[in-house]
Image (cartoon, rainbow, N blue to C red):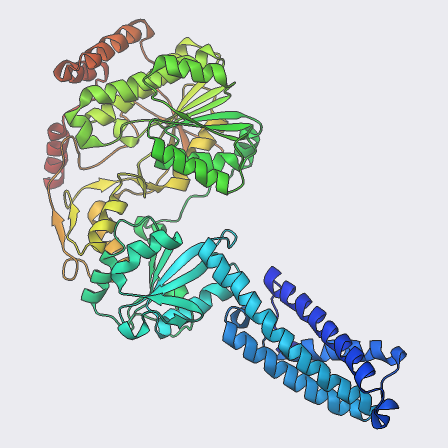
Length: 636
């Protein structure tokens, strides 16, 4: 029964604290014994009661054991106690008083000298414990918070320094699989400004959130004011707009369950709830074997898909990962992230360059002995490419051809193209250009056999740059309205990890010339996605958070497809991945067509570029043709 009350989870910090306490108790006892032996030896009444050397070691073991046991029984070695300076000191003092009193009474029956020794030792131990707990707090909290040197825990800001905020704080620091490190509170209550709660500083008002996030390098914000009004919540969350960190929201009071753990009830953007399906997990054992000891080039390595590719690849023991991107800020960000996570510069390289620059690509391929290429570099914004079709050809098509040609020339083992469902029966320049990229890969596969060329086709990626989720999130946090193009528009969606898993799996399975397609379940209505996201933020769609329909954008169709009419699917060993039988490209004409359209693009002749794109990609239709057909079919 006694042992059941001692609940110690031996983390590194708890173990370290117990060891220090054992050493301090031992030092206190030995110091007291030395002092009593010298100072009280001349006093006759104590002379005969001074413990002999042979009994001291047994008494020392008893003193240490009783004090450690007392502290454990009072919960002094729990994360909750150790995380708060005042409660830790109170607990330690109570333990010393109890242990000193009980042990001195017990040993008094054996020896008065031992009883005096235990009392003196307890006084010294209490003083040393006070010093150690204060040092512990400053070393593990104040120093860690101010310098950011707290392992790999995510610095966390808690909005609301009241009861719920305190509960969230304790849940975070006591979590068995702890990932978050509370750094500070922020509140609009002026009485709390410049005070401390749970040992952390309280700042205010909430307009300081962006400044605090920058100062403390915040990675997670927890909104912990369930009692506030909808208007207050909207105003406070507006301060989080534009900050590059996750936001979790504790539900309103009437939505909170009776559980004590508030943080577990807080809501972030739950992808599975948004998609209405389970996340797809892809076995990566074969992928790891494929990547092992390979030099991997990731073009567009700073983008959403490219950076996630880099994160996954570095964990699979590659010889080197080369991050190639024209945008230096993105490339720098993923490089620094990987370096912080322990992957050295001998593994992670960065090349700032455009895939359009053939000579620069030649220099890079000369520099590295590349084994595998993941080609994620592309212009993907549909309306912008409608206005700048020549740029879609220069970057997407010519860039793909340059990389594919270098892959053949330098004996690269495999090249994987990141494609899109918009390449299927395209209604816009971006989708048509990506279909032409697939044709480039097919042409290279039919013409050259040294490199295995493959494409991966999937739908919209949740959370990626330019996707609807970041846009909707900003609109909600700014107070609305949330804008949707059309009430009937539907899209296939997947998460970034799912997309990257498919790309890596495709690289593993590829024999050349295939297009891999992921079974992404049923397509999702964009308006349903918006409604679900609004509810996750604690608002009621339409009434508390308006949704406005702004009309289809240029080149946009109501639905997307993963297959063209003449394409067939073959199953693979993974029931979520299929191989699409590609139609062969007419190699005798394709290269001439390619040179003709790239020449038009280089002349910046938009009209001729689009006209040639329609000729080369016969499935390229206008959105009006497709959408009118869909609407007329729906009416029937």
